[in-house]
Image (cartoon, rainbow, N blue to C red):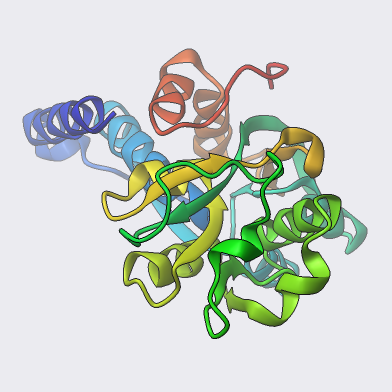
Amino acid sequence: MLTHAMNRRLLATALTLALPTSAFATDNIQVAAAASLTDALNDAIAVYEAQHDVDVTPIYASSSTLARQIANGSPTDLFLSANVQWMDWLEEQGVNIQQRSDLLQNRLALVSASPDLPEQFVPGDEARIATLLEERDRLSVGDPDHVPAGIYTQQALEFLGEWEELEPKLARGNDVRAALTLVERQETPLGVVYQTDAFASDRVRVLGLFPTSSHEPITYPIALIGAEQNDAAVALREWLASEEALTIFADYGFDTDISSP
């Protein structure tokens, strides 16, 4: 995966340097995207900018944070959420959502950087996560009160019958990357993040994936935010659903085998 990503970035840089001065970006596209998309979308944007006269500005945060910012008038042309609920919420607030569809899916992973824990531990496979934690240990998660990864985690732990025991042990991050960082620094022995976050880190390992039946599908919808008259934004939205872009997302561990946008 890293080899493919590095090759694309090198190609994107070469193409950009080869462009004449007059061909540099003139259109700016504001993209609000879930934190879990950071590495894959940065890679995709580099490729796209090398091929088009545009300047794409991504803003990464929890989907909940981004949705609230958009609802409060933050300038955004394109929104990629880590769950459908926050896109639904924006529509309920009267925000002009256009060309909405589902783009990607993900999996929930139990991760660790501790050498003292097992190499494999599949949640729900006749094993309880709580048995891996000492009395003062914490489980790093996105905040279940608003972060999509945390919401899925709560659903999964409730399904597995571990929520009541583990809730007091949660270390709640403002987004899924914050949860990952705590595990990377070994400030917590365990964390629950998306498998794509684990793939993007060389400091954690995946102990096991949560059963897909334990939580709602982890679906990433994409939509224009009142930008149908913005040809550059429309073109980027279409390209992100193309085979070229989806291949990039797949390299980072996203599931792209869903209904075509």
